[in-house]
Image (cartoon, rainbow, N blue to C red; front, side, top):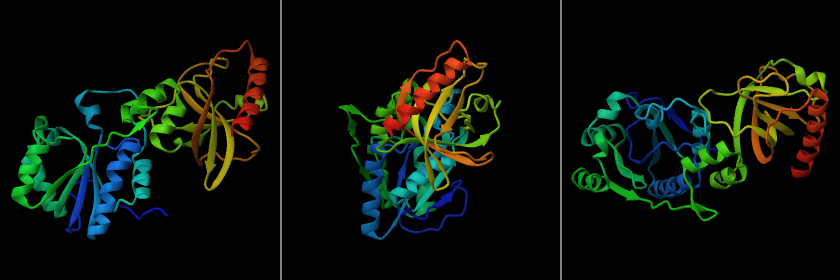
Length: 308
């Protein structure tokens, strides 16, 4: 059962002052490594009878500090918060990352946290905070001994297939279409959601209508290709052959996400569809014509049924 989560948009908002165990980080993907840190903190907070809280930032600090413009995020903020709630977190604060935050001194930031949360413990990996990352572990422990909070470091060395799990690894594997590695690192199927919008309806002319999803423009997409996926519409699940790419046989253009739902015939324009990616089937390629494309899609559908 999913925990009822309290979500706050900024540290400047009113937050109930009560004893809190806090962890800080981006937690993009909420992968197995994140789950280890969060799980230990949440368990300790529950045993102590205090609130568990996550402080995260948006935009991602790297987007600001490095000027990154390409698709980057593994989750939307909404999906990230849903995952955190599922782990049992009580409170999530998504604070804007800007120049003010970038330049704040570590001691000033810690004072703000203490006044905001009645912070009793800080949990995390080998992190640092504040201007030029001056608030390292030794700094925080020294400050904690003076101000009544403790620092708990969880050495998250979680591995999958003998390699360290990280958000960077998940992004790289997504860009390569390595869904097996992505799902292993996440500990669940990779998913994305989007509103069904009208496309050129070319799929209907070849008897394979597709749901074209309007996906958040900052969300990283899997490599171009065809995938075996599950499509969720509300609480209903369908098998789906999903194409990510530019549709070179038809007209090319911008990258799109379109799913052919098996054994489904209905109007879902304007509804939200969530796709869970299970297997990479083949790369996207240009066919000689619509008949050749139709024959390949027929083969893809058979493979989706076999895989799922």
